[in-house]
Amino acid sequence: TSAGGYDGFLVKLTGSDLTALWARNWGDSSNQEAHGVAFNSTGDIVVVGFLQGSVAGLSSTTLTSAGSSDAYWAKFSGTDGSSTCAARYGDELGQVADIVAISSAASGAQKDMVNMVGYSTGTITFATSMSLTSAVPNGFVLQLSP
Image (cartoon, rainbow, N blue to C red):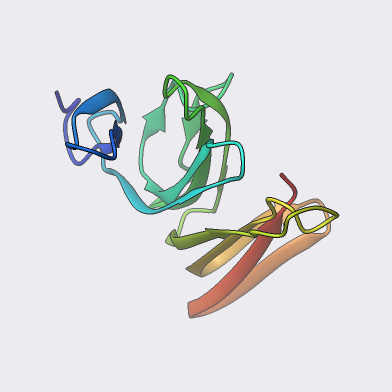
């Protein structure tokens, strides 16, 4: 059931007859959208999209948008759909994460690297010394360690 606006959701289906094994959703009265999904080598799932308002349950803290929309990622257990960690990035303008891909390297530093693609207007800060600023929408690529 939606909490209002658009809510993100994730459903794990069986491979044989597409029976739902579990389902999760997240949202509040504002909009939260899931735009991309990828699986790592252990079966965990990473979802990216954008959020407005505040969303509890995607990490140990509530994720709250700084303005129009913020890009986010969330990692879920493939076993039961519980959220294991999440983060949001953005300012008062618009930021969106659209696509996620996870490295399929068998071993080494590249195994299960998360690669997120999106766009941002304003300033999007990924780490203390890693910010991008633009007055018009510009694309970004972010790589995260597993």
